[in-house]
Image (cartoon, rainbow over all chains, first blue to last red):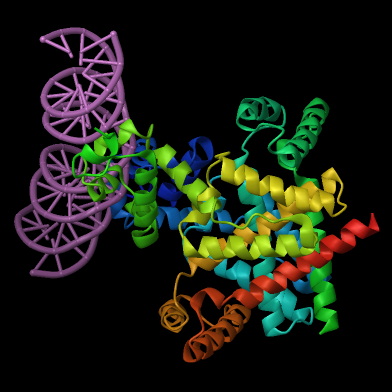
Length: 231
Length: 231
DNA sequence: TTAGTAAGCTTACGTCGTAAGCCTGTCAAT
DNA sequence: ATTGACAGGCTTACGACGTAAGCTTACTAA
């Protein structure tokens, strides 16, 4: 009889199903909720069964990185290095905001999976074909990635919808006497009034810091252009 | 009798001693090695005794953040915003490289401790007194911090002395076929030959990526200058 | 003298990753 | 048709972790 049909009800466990389950747990309840036992339970299986398809938990984490990385847009040099890198940056931010746990995970382990390598290679290529020297391309790429990850990391540390933000700020206020930190309070007030306004207009929470992100992105891309043409 | 003298041999446990012990463990063996039992043992005490001085482990982690943050140079506006922020950036990088575990910790939790608040306040102040509007200052500060943390995070992910680096690169090579990732390999070769040269010249490992860091820092500071004077 | 209290200790619970080995259904070779 | 290997799941168990609950001791204030 054809092997595809006669199998028992439960779908066969595979490495891919393990990783996808882990991904959905992480998205729903955070990285800490990704537990061998929890992943197993969602698959209707015992924890130790996972080890037939995955060496250990670290391999699951590396797999998660790969899954996230493969969602990112790979830039192509066709429309110029600036447009390519801008698209890559925006895509990275979107993906990392969609998987809020991912940025810290990525930045806390070296895992040279294919998706990650492909992304790096494509980014460097765009710069090289845009006329950057090897050294320039390396510096520029490192700088851009630093900014992107750094920005998103700060963004996900403040993990609230615009309309919740003022409440959180309020709860923090006792720790922040205005006379000791006047400039900080000034900035906080600015952000909070804008958050309130955004909440009223129903602005998507992901778009909330988009202006700041784009500002920094422009500064960097323009700066790189200047630096490359000067040399 | 004076209370300071008659105490038993063991120095009294205090919150500060707990935090300093945790700090030295983290520096020596990484953040994962910071365990209630381990901290206690180093103090010649049982794990549960720590709870008389700290609420829980999270409070220890927040305490570590504060200790690290208080090592960072607080910028003063005297010599201009550019010099002030450059000094702050360099100092932050130095401190974060000295405590390689700190960057991920800081970026993965919101802990508004006084040292952190002071640093933010001072940074924003420098920008405001340099003529930036509230909004500009906020964007600029966010951008700079993003870059700094992002850069150092990548730096500590590659946690090796210059002379070890080529070996590690070699061990990674099988995963990276040159024909699939030519631009990546090109960049890696560049970095590796430079690392070898640095190792030969005995360059301090912390200084190793200093050139890239300074490059990005210049791009950002110059870009901010332009952005602020245009508006 | 005594009652209160702060600081350290003991025991124990539930959760985690995972080592070791068992059980059973499938399939290829005899 | 029989058998034997083996892949894929299960069971049990261990040591490490954070920490709740409650005990003991020793100093202090009345």
